[in-house]
Image (cartoon, rainbow, N blue to C red):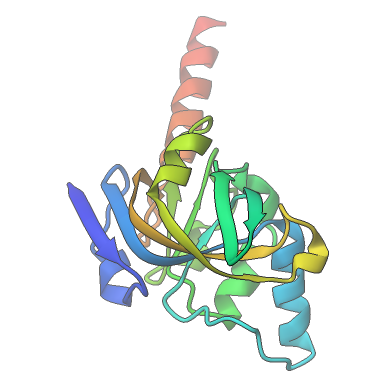
Length: 191
């Protein structure tokens, strides 16, 4: 199935998605990589409020290349980064915040249980930085620029951002694990 969803996402939006579905997103999304995830969790431990709202949000694993202009920022490139680096922090983040989707490349390890009935992982093809940039209408804000351009949280307004493939759905189906298991099964038969 193909879905066109608007952010912020509702729980029902992600529960309807199945592994293998195609998704296009419109609305606000946030970039966040390792250091941003760590700061989000650190602020929660310190009972500090985030400068952005994660309720119903989409986190894009991306370290964009931006160019500052007189009244804001231009997106030069915004391709996905490898998501497995954020796998360890994702279950804790989902306990604290109602993030509904993560977008990145390569899948995530050991997160399917924490996404149960509340979030999905959407895979974006690596090497599509220019395509991703075309779907970004504007940069609404940048948070934590002290982390550096790729690690800062960029609040982006997107239109028909995708195509994204549901790699891990909210019911425990994980395309990446399935492919890995089938490959290992095939490999063991060859030996």
